[in-house]
Image 1: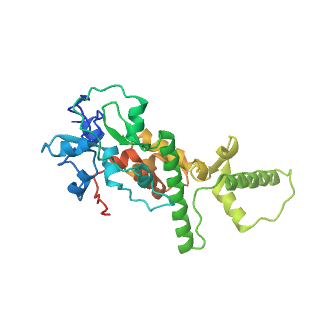
Image 2: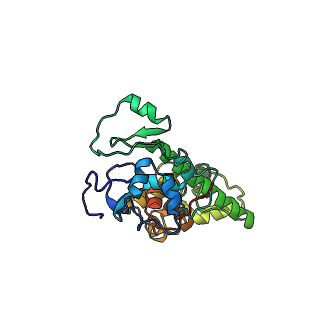
Image 3: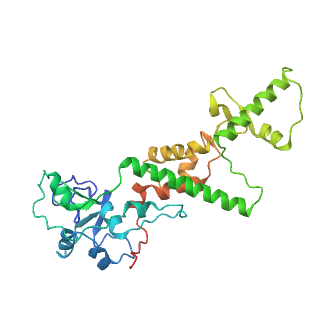
Length: 295
């Protein structure tokens, strides 16, 4: 179904009636649902239109990832939970169950009163179906970034708790600038421009591990052995996510890391795995075990 063009009606979500590209945008109902889904509970959380479609006993219906995630209120991320939960915030508004059954998928205009009558937490789609009001793209991106750093910080804290001398390979921007300053002054000493001073063991380790390169700011700091740039904590989300997207939302962290190693030092596979596990594009297309929570 992935290669078939979008067609209103046939290739539309059974719950919100939005056109979709089959398996690229959702699950086939019921045969394509992830293992472990309680179908009866899932259907009870759909709109009236979705429940009506579920009763048609068809095996070619489609349920988009947005409606599926909203109805299940869960995701298959393998990453540890941070201070917040992406899935919880994205599915805070329950699907309405009192929406009239849509018989015409060609509905194109809705007035503001239509949207107000649907409720503050719902939107009326161009196909006559009320769906939950989801966060904007900017809000989702901000939440994605926050979740990444929350989980990254948690992993670092746990590693430091287990190993007192543990230090992550990446550096914060402040740490990187201190190392750059140290190496710059060291170069001044070797050329006779500065007086020799006593250095600590840690500073000697920095000199053995890093080297300065042509560039401004933190870009000047390079790993001595490989010659690549040192990963900066504040930039890690963008660096890893750009590589992930650039490889077509690759889901194998090891492959993404192999690409990153050509340009960056200090990023490990666990860092990359966080992006893969939290990426909503990849979460929605992962066939994992999803269990609905009974209330």
